[in-house]
Image: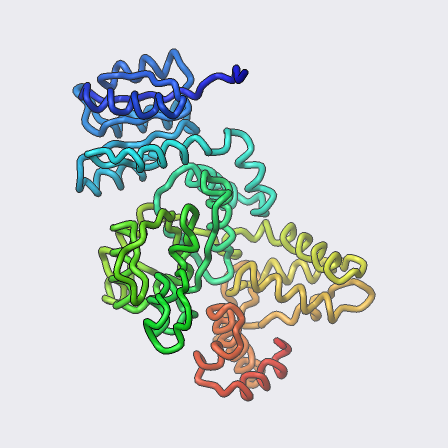
Length: 448
């Protein structure tokens, strides 16, 4: 005999028919329901009872659902709240998500969607374990990282689309994974895709799938990325690289929550949470008409900025120690130590490639160093990005033209490599170099 207490749901709506529909549906899910007709009754119930989920209408006789979301955020931020809005009130729903709502439903309420939302909300991790799990994966004790962890903790408990901004190599994909892993979709797929790495002619097939015979080479049915991420999270990395024609199709898929494969006749319903990222300024891309404004508003419900390594120099030592420990484990060698001058050099370096560049620098130094001690010269840092006090070095005082030009060349090549995820062929194309020339330069600069 199961004697575990039933989970409690608070329903807030002034329409008796809606309350009854929700009560019956949730009762069949073996959930205990409490109902309130207005904001005052809801607040009184919240004071007396502990709830596992709150469903509230947007319009209440004595206030709004947004006020209730804000009230709950202040008193019990780990209680998920879902907003019920009139059909087509997308702006209202977005405002609710920004205020901290878990998700939203539109009227007339579709019962399968209601059951799906409730089940998802009740799968949220309990308070307490989130921050610890995030701290283990996202290293650093600086204030920018403390703020980032706090935001991830909050966003993991929401279904809102999130736009993750930040420089190349700053850890945007890791942040996306943490949002997914700490949320109710954790047991479902996390599907990352680099939008800039898919050839434009294959993009629709990659995203939505294709049917056998729909084009030359389509020898069998193939599901797309949306279908692969069903029930989970689709992470669109470098989303600014999508061509305008694909942006239109992506917008429709997000709006309709359905996709049609290439050569297919019917749409397939998909349930995915969309997270996206780019190192570019997406708002500037909209202004330049390279990115659709309507898609921008769909994706950028909440923006989460990942700080650059320059903004958290206090974390460099801890990050370096972590990387060196991992390298020792991977290679089976004793752990290398950083000479104090090498650590100082790292702290005074600008790191245009951020954490990813730090890892690459240390991996190279780990191989080159003698007696398991990494000296400053083993790091081979670009002088053009070294600083004396955390500011950009003054490059107007050039004593050696060859050294200066080499530092500029190193900087441009590193930037191209970071932007292409260290794909040498793609980086060479970006710099209009042959692969052979690229390979020569990498060897000359000690970047191979």
